[in-house]
Length: 160
Image (cartoon, rainbow, N blue to C red; front, side, top):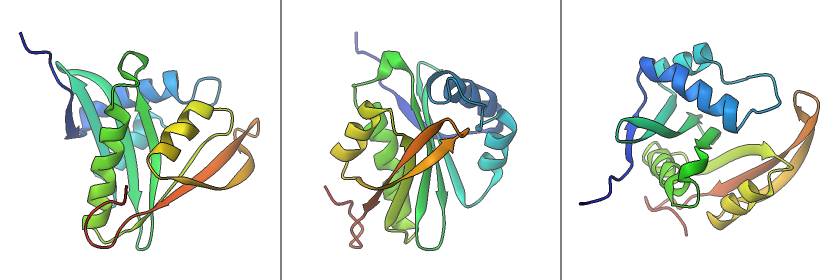
């Protein structure tokens, strides 16, 4: 019997609450929730934002939100449930969003992450992201953020 594989699909309005719950539990733990269901619902409806969901047998196991600007895109949220980590799902979500940024003509991706989250920093570094600075007190005034960015190829392919 074949093992089920995660399916990536654009979020629908009904996904707002489950994505918010994933974020609250695994990304925003200990902070005031920034990614509320209402905010995610607005992101789903925003033509300049992509909310991408990862499902395994209909269960939401990960999500990502990318906001597109004229010159840069902002990876605003990436969350993968702990049972799915280190299996390539985060990479799949980011790669899908990076490819859509290139199609949209956006070649610089920026993001922030908790400065204490060394595993996430290593993950992004492995994908080609580089630290560009820190922001003191970015998260509720209690935790600093590490800012990172990646330059994508203009030829339509993503740089390794």
